[in-house]
Amino acid sequence: MLLALATVATLIFTIRQNNDVKYLDFVKSTDAEISQQLEKELHLKGRDDCIIYGYNYIDMCDRIMFLIKKRKVPQEFLEYYLGFFNYAITMMWWYAKIYPNDEHSLKSSWLSLKRWIAQKNEINPYPLMHLPAEMKKILSDMNIKIDIDHNTILKNIEESYSFNENKF
Image (cartoon, rainbow, N blue to C red):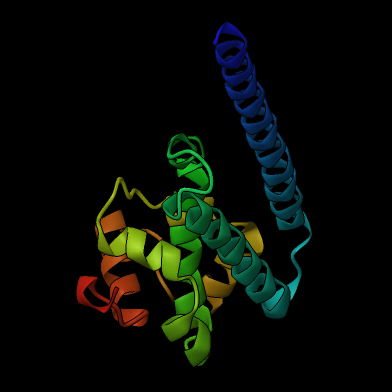
């Protein structure tokens, strides 16, 4: 009986260690991906580069949010990556303003982030002045103001992406 209890205790300890290693690997790889993506901000040249950058950043954050919401990683990761998600919301606003003809992305993509917005969870989009210089220049060239508050950003996103809580 004692041997069985010791075996079970060892097994539980091993599983916990394996999960800790798995989550540490997740954080390392995710942080590396985010760092690589953010590094690209310095090299953006023109509208197409900015659109690709914005799309990729939003997509990356949506994948992380998906894993959190599906409980593939602990919920604590939401708090850890909260700033990146809020920046993704700002990117979603930019993307919708600059590339409104991408019906697929605006209607069908980034469902995990859209659900998060619809649930009104801890959302505080970054001010638009934090966008990369090239992205701000494109907004300026299109005469789009960047000094708007985060409630306006959220309202614009909900209108642009045509979603509400009932669709999810």
